[in-house]
Image (cartoon, rainbow, N blue to C red; front, side, top):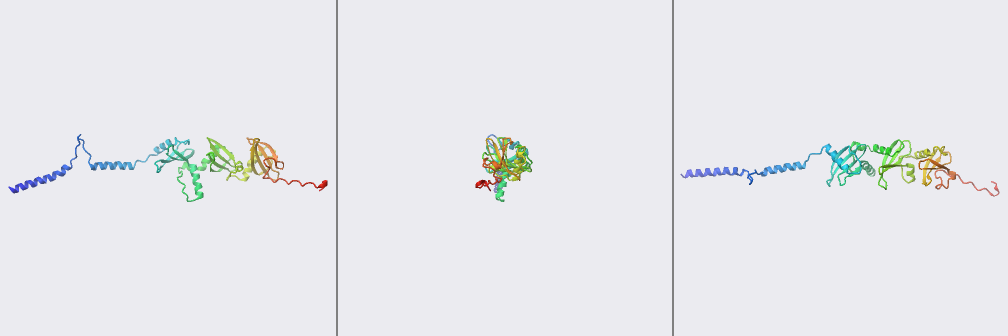
Length: 313
């Protein structure tokens, strides 16, 4: 009898031990009878969300172009975006793009408020200056879209827009003028060059002979080319036979602009021209001492020695 009782107790304990884990594994029911989420399944779902948040899908080329177009439309550049490249994000969370603008120079674009666009031409010019001062200098991000890298093409286009009357063979950015406009030097293969700049959508050009008179410098224009410029002004005037070897702009007043021309094998002249560069008057250097201080390029003839007393040599 005692052995049968022990056997029954052992069987009961065994069945309880087996049932307890099974019961523990049954999901709890909420008051609304909705199945509860176990801790294991919740952590797996959260992990999946975190992975998705850490690795969002990369934007497509179409999405990058549309975002860049939207931002450029908020600038005053007038750029019609033809190509865009996503460069990344800054430490402050703004996004940076490089954009091409069709036939016009492109920009680096940062999505500030308002968006900030930096000309690829200016970035390249600044980098060139820094490398000239220090070949190891950090020049910062530069434009790399193929349409943005041919800076000479854009500068030649600017020369055409400014109506520079020559075959352009060299061009460069000089920097900003006092009024904030970008100034460019244009060199010509067969004539004197110019400084050009654009203000309020309109281009102006300044002949290098005038740049020199205003203490500027033209690296792409020679003394002979400036002389040739004045030679063209003298065409059709009394000084047309002058073979100009050197020339300078002397200044201007209400009557016109004054140039001095040094003539090969002959006395030099001062020419006064009007706003249309048509010669109005020619003054020989021998008698032009009162015109702007006289000639500087032509050696004045020596003054005649006074006659001795009695009128004899």
